[in-house]
Length: 206
Ligand SMILES: Nc1nc2c(ncn2[C@@H]2O[C@H](COP(=O)(O)OP(=O)(O)OP(=O)(O)O)[C@@H](O)[C@H]2O)c(=O)[nH]1
Ligand SMILES: [Mg+2]
Image 1: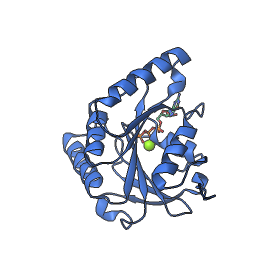
Image 2: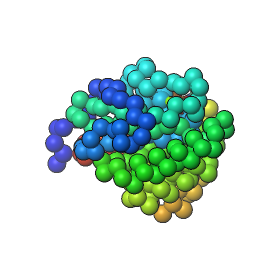
Image 3: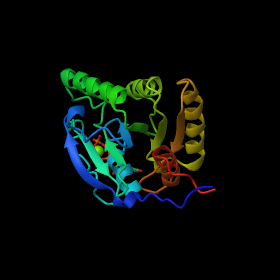
Image 4: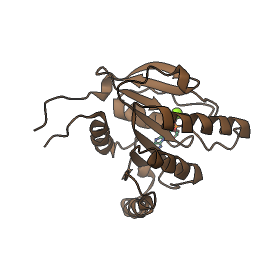
């Protein structure tokens, strides 16, 4: 039987912006990272999940911020906003630095218990998305793949893409769940909460 413990995402507070993993808070407890291409809708998803309008700021210059943003819930769990990738204007040296930081983060961060990979529903599983998911799977980190901006498609097309994406996800040969998501229309939020609750170790209601 589940205890009546509850997690309240509305209590998320900004803690710090870290330039590298050495500047992150102590590697204790549990954290979940949000990752995805620049403009995929990471900040919007975090704001939707936490019911806060501007907890995570929408970047005016996509791809420029290479900081790891850390948010903390009142119960101590952390939500991590990883830098967006795939922005064409980022110099190769910065890309390599980011990939280095990301793989280091995925491999070394003991408290990382799950990663939410956000991809625009109209073009999911781009190369870097796939690399990220492979890294996660090979590090035994479960993945929630969110197909964002799902409001951009009609229901039929959306269902088709979700089915196809679920088929494609089998190839990763790991714990990869695919869901449609929209910050605008607020759908998929229940799926995100359920998954995060599970990763954070809170029992779902029976
Ligand atoms: N239609 C629609 N637009 C969305 C949705 N989510 C985000 N957007 C829009 O997509 C753009 C990018 O959203 P952000 O949340 O800033 O994306 P991001 O992934 O944080 O981008 P970076 O910080 O640059 O990596 C903004 O103009 C949002 O308004 C959604 O669910 N539906
Ligand atoms: Mg953002």
